[in-house]
Length: 113
Length: 115
Image 1 (cartoon, each protein chain N blue to C red):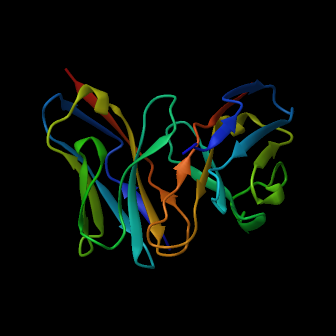
Image 2 (cartoon, one colour):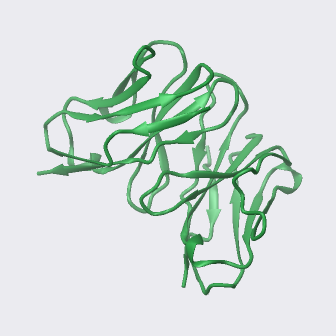
Image 3 (spheres, rainbow over the protein chains, first blue to last red):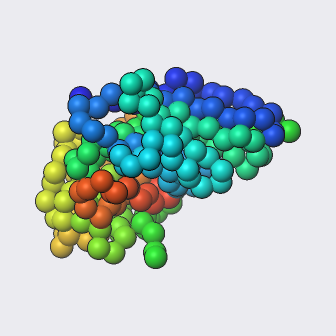
């Protein structure tokens, strides 16, 4: 069975401070893992993806995530938050070669000036 | 590259009415998905097509929802009759094929309000 748990429904940080959005997954098969961002009234945009190559994945806008198989985690980080990062972030698991995408419940990131 | 196109962007209907949504995936993408995103939740898969065949419709409420993908390109999702709890954003996505580098590309969605 496949599932994704995003441990925080809301995260609030100050501009210029680090961001950590946590994600744990469960998958019966070697998974691909993704982070998508959704700005208000916009579509889902891919931030980054892990597909069994390097465990540290770099994405757009300075975000990165580390795949830790032993912890079944794929946390999203950014060294310094920007006001434009305020959005909802979704962690997604896709069992290898199954072409299916299972979403977490999302984490809303608020960035304070 | 053109993205996934959806229309309309917004729709307001009364309960028991019917409504249809349209999706045009990225050219060459064999797999098409319809997701339902209720406010405050992550997207939930309703139906998945591979070309014009249904791969997974286990979460589709078939008594009121239907979907088709004629000729393996465009797709329509219909709700008849609508209920208040169908108020959500309906997202269409497409992906190229199976494999390690597969990712899903999403449209901007249709926001449905049932009153």
